Image 1 (cartoon, helix red, strand yellow):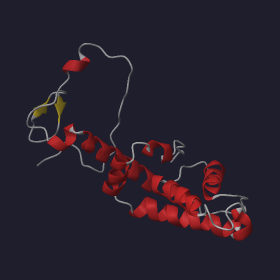
Image 2: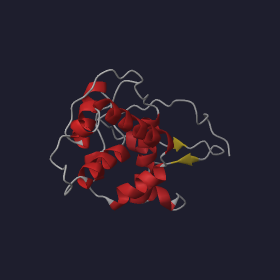
Image 3: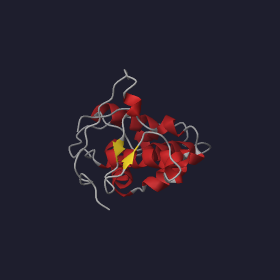
Length: 175
């Protein structure tokens, strides 16, 4: 198979709210031996691309690729007071102006839920765990999620959780 442009080259995407009648008639070149594709679904189009599962996998792949490119802050000089893991996560997002990975947000929520019923449930976490250690722990977990998580795993979790978007941060830094 031949591609018109290499996979590694950036592609400019132009979006417009206005569309003309000629827009719907544009043919697309998929780069496969000069074959032309219309913007309609065809019988020979892979089934995976037509299903919501295929769309979800593609969204997870784009999300994972985006998160992989966000650098982990190396200079962390402030001790952030916090009473819960989710609260510390929110403070980190505000302080460093970048999102935390979906899997990190889920983990922080799980850690808070695990405290329910313990004898120290209502005690602020920053009294039990030094704020610098807690922040370093979150950044370590974040690095693991950004660099090693499979988009297939993320898509599988998203598929089983209809409210997954509640744990996907919308704070996007300038790269």
